[in-house]
Image (cartoon, rainbow, N blue to C red; front, side):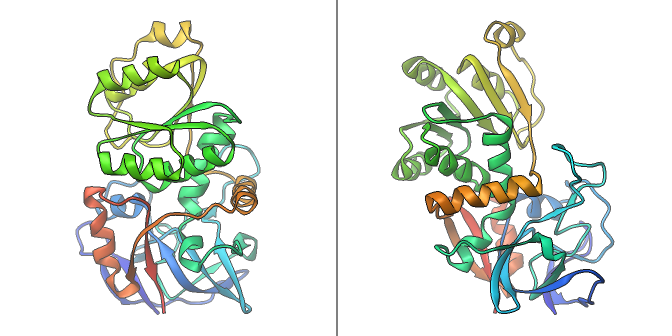
Length: 320
């Protein structure tokens, strides 16, 4: 089959043929669309943990056909039975062949019917980012109707899903971004207001204006994380699912305990949360935002396009 093949960080990513042999106990999904995550880009740089059997196929998100019906894939492998992942937990697209390919073998219980109101491209955009956002926002931070929610770095896949989920739940949603254009696009979705995260004073002013935030969702960490904590109101929940800026220094500990703030680390989610996330999407007819599309043969270009984080929404591969 044709696929986007990763042979190691010292080898160029390539579009090539690779054997896709049947696997016992698994079914074959003929892929029609796949979506990118920043994880795919980090893998090519050698910045993602794990020990794959190289060469491997990238990609965690996909939608395709099995026995004539359209399904999307839950990308979990060995999450386990508890509310937190097992030691052996991994995600499709590294240790196991992923979705940037013409087909994939997965357990049948990892296939979920495509939401009927979505195209295959929109549905392919859901799995990893949607599950990560749902767990951080709902499972970990307990967001509910009328909560005041702040989502940092709007424009990325997870941040946008968190935004759409929070709006569907009836929350008051605010965002941050380094791009005024992305803030304006977020307002078109129903976001009340946004602020540039490069201006800490403006962020604090926003928090004072609205009376602080009940829930904060972040993927950056770094020195700006302390500013986010200062924007919290009493009893706030903060979910962090990434660290693109780096480690967190300079946190005001008194701010944490006087405000009774809870910080929740979060990543991906269980199969049960995947099903609950799809229920939310179906109930509220949420439509994932697709920024742009490439053919599978252009997959290397698509992965490299993530370098500057210019997208607003998901990048999708069309698979003939």
